[in-house]
Picture 1: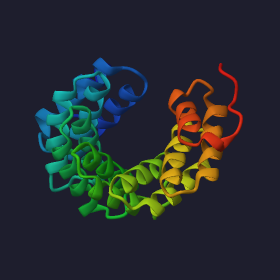
Picture 2: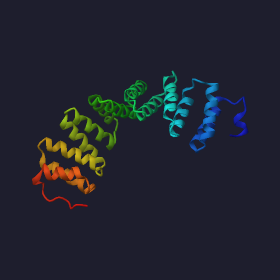
Picture 3: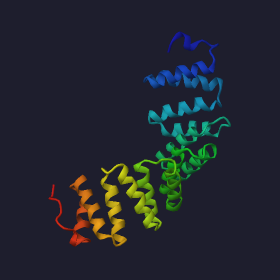
Picture 4: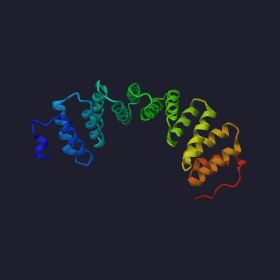
Length: 235
């Protein structure tokens, strides 16, 4: 820390800028000392609490990050990103119900925030609420979701019995990224249940091309669709 950093007359905004510079360049001890100093001067400053929480999370101190980000997101001046990051920490701590509340708080501040919608979907899934998870993933998909989110959406739709919609979501995921074996396998399973065995066999074959050692795909293709034709060779 520089001599200028410890001047007692420095403004909190200047201290925060310096702390963030240290944080971004790997000076974690210097950054944390400055974040702590800011908290003495401005204990309820949401932005400082948020950045301090991200730092301690990066250092693996998740319980402390939970406290700091909780204080940050509860502040009247908090933005949606603080609530999203708090939700992520709560998920990492396996507190799915609390995480869902944090993501909902973010959505009250920014209803179209993709990271909040996606996080809420994950938290609801982890909380055993597949229908709510599907709803959140579906809302996220309206704002340009990527292949991983479409995969999650398809899986959630499948769990709640909306089979055709699940197949469509998984088709969309595979069109964007055709290299994910688990998408191909899940889609094949759904298509087989729908009675589309020939198309299902094609997706099982694709999974085996992408991952030749995928035992579930090989077994499903051999056992449930015996007329599917020649399997790829064993790896």
